[in-house]
Every structure is written in C-alpha cells, then in structure tokens.
Length: 428
Image 1 (tube, rainbow, N blue to C red):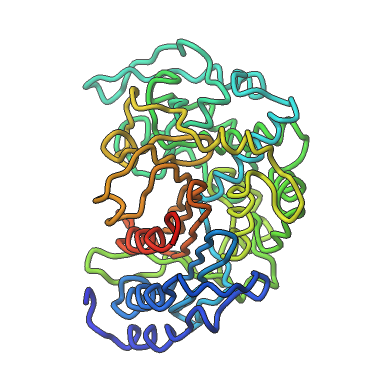
Image 2 (cartoon, rainbow, N blue to C red):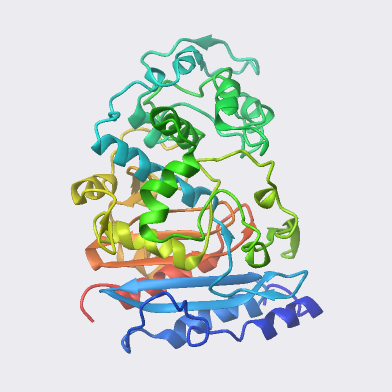
C-alpha cells in the first residue's frame, strides 16, 4: 500500500463500492458481454482507490459493437465526499486536441484550408516569430524561419513553438511560461498577440515538441468560420453527436457534478489543486477557449466522440468526417527520422504521431503485457491523467478518467490498458 489508511482513505474505500453493475450510463446501450472479465476490471480500479493511488476514477471499454464495461469508483470531490458516477464532469485538458484536430480535418474536407497552407495565411504575425539558435549563452541569438510554419506542422507539433507548461527548462520555455498564454479572461485572439512575440525553439519541421500548436489551429478555425471555437465544435461535433455535457465552460446544472482537481505530492498524498465548486471553468468571465486543452466532458459524452472515430467518422447516422480522413489521421505522419524532444514517443516507444494523437507503429509481447499498447492504436491523454485510445484493428476503444497532476503517468494507465487489450484483442 502506497499510503497509510487515514480517515480520508477510509472514506475513499467506502465510496468505491460503485461498480459497473450499478453505475452504468443509462444513455449507453446495454449488451450481454460475458466474455469480458468485468470483475477483474472492477478489482483493478477499486484497488487503485483503496490503496490511495487515486482518489476517484471512471472508465469505459467498447469492443466489437458492445459497451463491455463501465465503472466508477472513489470520489470526485474529496472535500465534500462526492462520489464519482457517470454524470461526473472532468477536465479533459489535452483530450481537447483530437477534437480540435477533427474540426481542422473537417474544414480541410470542405476545401477551406489545406495541410500545406502556411499558417501565416490566416495569422500573418506568425511569420515574424524568430528561431532561437542553440548555444551556451542563456540569451540565445535568433534567426529567421527557413520556411513558414504550415498547418501540418501545427497538427504534428513540429512547428517549433514552446508551451509554457513544463517550467523554465530552457530559455524559450521560460519565455512561454511568462507570457500568460493560459489566462482565462482573454480570448484566443489576444493570446495570438502574445504568442507571436515569442521565439521558436527550432526551425519548423525539424523536430517534435509538444506545444501550443493546437491552440493556434483552434484560432485559425475561428478566423476561417468567423465564430468562436466553442460554437464551431458545437455545430460540427457536439450537437450532432448529442455531446450535451462537453464544452469550454461548466454550466450551473453541471457544477454539482464537476470534479475537483488534485496534485500528487512527493510523499504520495494528494493536495487540492483546484476546487470544482470554485473554478474558472464556471466563471462567466472566462473567455479562453483553448483548442489545446480547454474542454470538460463526461465519460459517456467522450465515448460518443471515440465511437465516431472508431466507426470511421460517423455516429448515429451523422457523418463528421469521411472514413479516408479518419484513416489518414490515424497514420504516423511525423516518422522516426526526426528527433522527439520529449520521451513519450519515438523509436524507443515504437510510437509516432498522426493528426490529433499518437500512433503505435509497432509492439512486442512484452509491451502488450505491460501496457496494452498495440500496433495501430491512436489516441491521447490530458494533463490530469484522463486518457483514451482507439483500436480500429480490434474494433475497440477505451477511456479512463482521473483528475490529478503528477510528474509521471500513473501505473493505473498501463494496467487498465493492458487488461482492456487482453480482453478485446482479436477473436475471443
């Protein structure tokens, strides 16, 4: 056990009694799927709560036309003793990026932009961003872009932009951190004025670095459509798919279901990072619609998005994307010949990057047993450890929701994915 059983932990154990049998989303189809070991998954998730590894979680697995598992355990709001259930609203952070990427691909299908377009066609000031030369001097000299940043560069995080969420690990990231690119009271239009005064970390196309790129794509969608990103997403995705619980703000009726966010301390305890009942997400003055990380959603709502992607761009008779576009998104377009400047992807991980998410390009029996990361899977996660993957080769997908910050992904991610894959791979 990672933590001693305190009073709070005892409360978590008591609240972990909800299982897949009594917490299923009433809006999801019910199927008899005896071949999926629900008890094993219940045990995995409930034990993570009882051991103090997580405060609360919910998860869903879909396989071969069936929702084979839903489960909810622990607390969404520890301070108020509010349990996780299927109505719980989560900050999905970077699971917003695949949604924004779908918007961009939809605009491409309509002929409103191209992957090869220079981004400065829509935001001219992007052309003014200089590239920081590497060197020992903490005040790096700069050079002009060898070529413009393209829409595809932004899609693949190879634009050269920084992010500002990793701390001042170098001079460029320090500048992004100080720039205030995530202040809730400003629109993306104002954010672009700040961004375009910052340097690039490397020449466009030279490397993969997780960045503010998808936020820029969200702003480009706004410029093309003359609407806010939230309006665009609602029109093209949320309303047609019935994703009534997904958006950039927490409505008053959602507020009682909105989780608090936590931070994992070095001693293994959790401290409150953001109170769900006192959050910028429910503040009417919040104008920031971040295409890179601003959405909130529920497990059932995001499952509709995942189902649409699994089924080749269609859900409940509504086509969002052509199947060929979905297949294109789920291919590795970054390749393995350019450096990945973070260790999450690349040759060692046997993973590349497509449009909107990572792509598993190979696997081994050992990797499958440890993490369930199988060749052909596409997906991404959020900063507070929500994550999902689409496994089109096996006609399956999985989603797990957590809500805390920590330097490393929780072991529960790999354990959940490995167990899910073992139950959904190929013919039973």
